[in-house]
Image 1: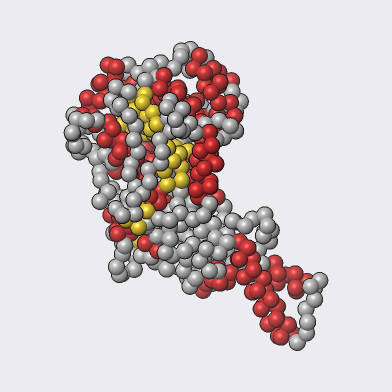
Image 2: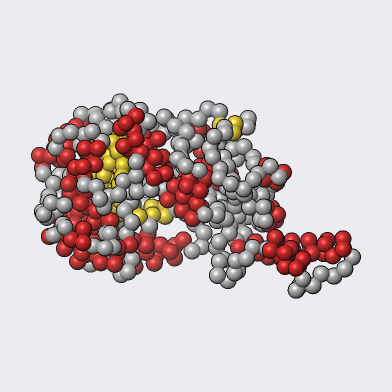
Length: 510
């Protein structure tokens, strides 16, 4: 880093970038901590233009390039597809690798992304001030404070708008409100800031997933920050509101908190909003999978080298969006409709009721064991003792080993007529958190079904095999939610000019 303070936005630079957008050109976005590109996809669909990304995970970095940089020359594609460590690459060097010449502050209009918060949360405002005064302090921080690195990129590239995403706990992490403290710094740099909590289910995503979103726009462009209005509603399950209130404990609210940056989450109006998209709306048009029940599925890595064709029949409005998303259309079928090999558990999945979690699953497994033990004793014509090898082997082959008290939420069978619960990166390890609602299929969800629940269109491709793809999907921001935020941000950038998005580069989801 150069030895300089965080510097304010130049009014001339803001005017130059803003004038370009007002003239109809797509705002150029750089995605930091990009993952496979959920935010990038939503922003591109709203009329923005991705110019590149920084992502540390090799599979996710290649996925991002495959979906957003497929039309560039091969040597440049490989540069975009390579993993990048944001702690080691400077903004100027990054843009140089992207073949973007000239002053680095001329190339990026919007920075988007979700920097990890752990190190920042432990040091808070004091560390922000230290780095503002001594930028090289970042390099000496063994915890690798990635939020500060994100702000360094903002300081160097001078975007006129920012989107930052993270888990709700970032508002109350070790006693710090990361979003509030970040807004303080961005305000000093010349931005108008605000943050809130948004749940993806309120924006047409078939998943109840709550995240913190922070938006900042150059103060000479926007007089205030707003967030999108919900389009869908659902009665949230018990527990969601409690989790939200814990996250909001450090938020400045009320009569004496006029200087806070928190904006109350928008509330859906069931009189004007559509009912939430359900798991069945999202998945019912995909081919059924039963090969695992027929002994045709084997253990091993799952590649995406086989097209599975869509069955004929009516499809939901949501399924149509997933098949026809501009630039990610899929006419005949999907390549990644693959599942885990879990032979011990198929019979348990079949018996589980919608909404059942691990305690109920374990009880079903014990009942199965008792039935199988009785059948085995009938075949042998004798009792089988609990200390016998046969008894122990049958138990091992039938009953999962996890403690019911310690892992109550490890398993869950989805309800067909409700949105799915939050998908996590842990999908990359087992997938038990999302057992398919169709008992006849008796399985966990496929890679493509996970993508559907996150609102990735069917033409979006994932690098690597099954486990890395699940991880990428679980880590992503749902593209439909990102698009709603991007649509609203575009309006903030256009201001009160009464202008429409006119760029030929834009795309829309209809």
